[in-house]
Amino acid sequence: MSSFSRAPQQWATFARVWYLLDGKMQPPGKLAAMASIKLQGLHKPVYHQLSSFD
Image 1 (cartoon, rainbow, N blue to C red):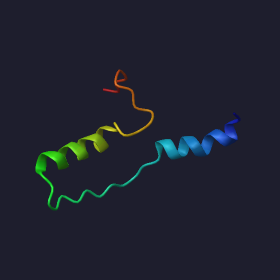
Image 2: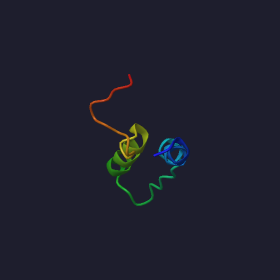
Image 3: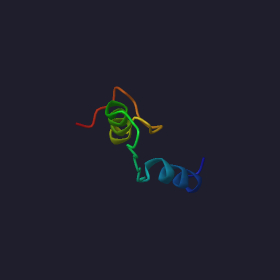
């Protein structure tokens, strides 16, 4: 795979995305769980549980 075809895929992987969480009629715990998954980056395909950036 050349670097030219890899660049758009990498851009899509690491792009910043805005999420709007609507908490209407949702239990607070479920809303917090959904928000924490997005904030920690657990939904991204490059996430690995053993990698730590702290």
